[in-house]
Length: 88
Image (cartoon, rainbow, N blue to C red):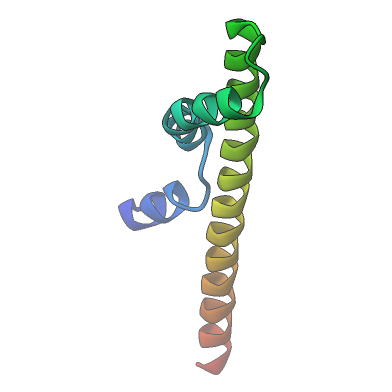
């Protein structure tokens, strides 16, 4: 497999690493938001759990959007290459 093709395939999906990095970035702000929207008497484990779940859902949505954009670009690139091949 050529190096160019390997690089192209590497950036056609945002995988688990991207999800984990996004999750790590969003945990702090999500816990803060969870603290603001819960009652004062809520135990800290409930606040942290709510924040982590909120961060996980948000990270999943961001990863899904990134994957959709990358897959769309890859499909457009394949279509352009296919059209270019037909013209010759």
